Length: 125
Image (cartoon, rainbow, N blue to C red; front, side, top):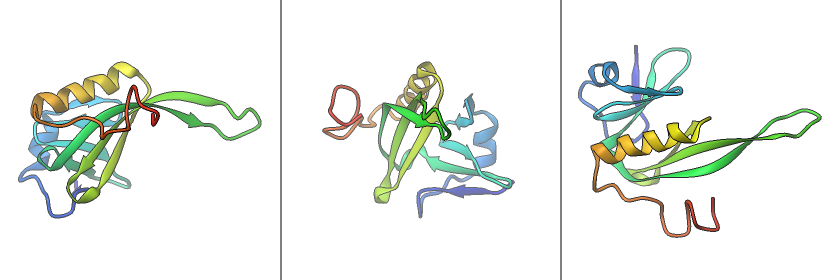
């Protein structure tokens, strides 16, 4: 399986070993050193936890196409990496998003939350 970092210039020494012990939340896996996302046709992409500059959760919606125009609620965790790279982790359940954020804070207690003006309690959700 191929592993590709989403933060240019920042890699994990053995992503395969880290992924094998990772916690699965939806299609996202959070290990001790990285956040792993599926990559098609095969392999995995990852964000090294050491490269994170911020992480926060937000409420969001997923618009469906078709005649109804229904918007489904969803929850996201936004990751900001070194170099201004952002990655969005999407979850169906709020508890999964909060668990993902909690795991990231366990691994990086010094990790800042939402930038000013974003996140829960702000005008930009």
